[in-house]
Image (cartoon, rainbow over all chains, first blue to last red; front, side, top):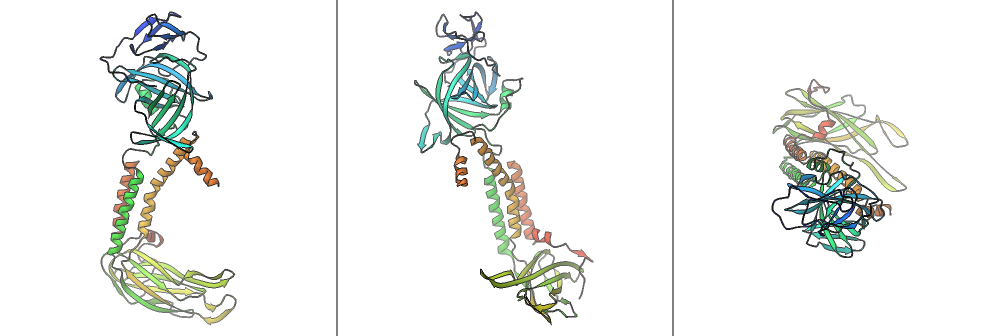
Length: 448
Length: 45
């Protein structure tokens, strides 16, 4: 219900004061020339200011009395403009269950604005002249305004419960309008209609701290409850979002990964075949020396053994012949197969790999000690013959490796995933008070 | 928050380039012990 007025010259510092025709108390007029009605702060009488004699429109005492948090006449700077509070009203929804407060602000050059407060959430509201485009389909609807889409959040009625100060229309308690709220956080578009007119207004969410600072409020601010319809989410920010940055970084990682994967030499430096005998006296097999070149690069060791319903395990040392440095590791191969009621099955593999990272250049050899079951056996009957298993080892220098990429991808995704989950929880909380929540449809689908 | 993520992402990409250039596999390094003179292995040759 905010209005636009033509700019005036300098703001009037001293309001006009006249005596209330009902109680004789002083009545202030701060928006002289614009005010149509004023409510006496002393007795609640509604006075017509367009009438020279200040005709009484209503002298009935208001049923409730509400003390505005920001007193009438208080000035404060919002969005770099100084506003003066000239009117106050409390309104409620059709059921009378929910109440909110509206402060009428005035600046002689800018006109009127509204500051609304509900459950500790504040909005700075201006009425708009150009009508938004309304789209209605099925149960949902939205409006487009200045290229932005606003989703329907609320439909209902609003009733005036209490008024104080001056207004630019003939306000009265009990006055009802039909309202619809459409949201595109941090903005809200409100539609108000009665028999005479339709008014659209655009609200901008303002943090309570800003209101407190602007109007020098020294009382306790109303506690913020829940999430306001147009409250911006904590992770929302202007410009490129975290998810967009996440995409950029994933693309960079992928390009780097492809670059490194294409650039690997994949050089086979050793291949050898051995046999494991359970009664072999020489347990450790030593490979011939092999040369690793090209600084620090990774080393892939591939083990193959044609095991069948059996296993073989290797205790391996990679020995640098110059420095005597040793890197030891264990690797096993196991492979089982059979047939059951579901058909043929297999488990395990006859091949396994070990990737050693950042192996410096130098002359190396492997010490391999294999172990397996002591005897050849079947599932049911053990045969007491010494077991023999062949195996091969292939050593490849500088191979492509994706584990770093997937690790980096996961590390990079933690914060965006948390932000996404947080925003989703926030949005669910926002829409929990609406009859038009998109999340309710989702929940119904999940239940089905 | 966004600034912190940009810094983290940039450092991650730089670290990723470093470990890949030197053939370091972070995951495999965690599974297998480090080099050490006179470590648990034996020089058999």
